[in-house]
Length: 166
Image (cartoon, rainbow, N blue to C red; front, side):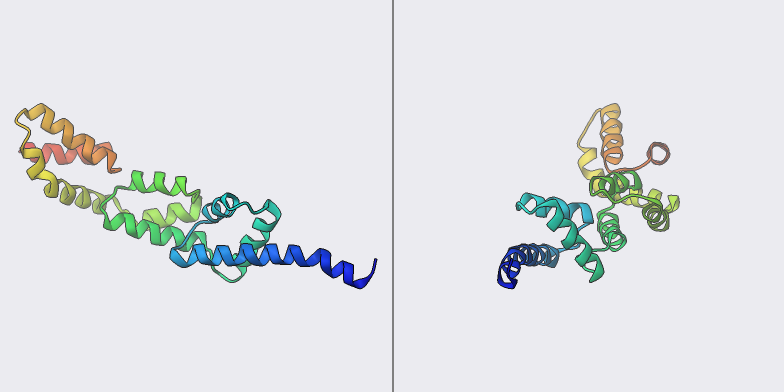
């Protein structure tokens, strides 16, 4: 084998790596993604696992992807939208963001008192819509479902419902 033929074999691999890296940078330019999300997006675009692993390693080396940073940003977005801790935890699991560090971030961002306050504010915002329901039992059920699907604990919901009855 000559030197020229060796270069020809390595060039397509380098081009594939470069194309995958460019694609990854373009994807990450829009918003932070977890490693899992980036792998999925690159896989959808037809890159091989070897190329994807190389690109992920390079993105980590350049600090383009960081699961903790992604978790922080995503948690703050969901917190602003008044979602409960349970909802946020499930959303993070969908993005394959989990572990002790993520749990610590959740505990830091979602103390129980804060969650009760958020649930109360969210319920106040929707009270006008709930007031349209004439049947008291149905209204309570709707309120409960609304808060439960928002990711709030049952204890918090029940305590808020008791306060409303008073």
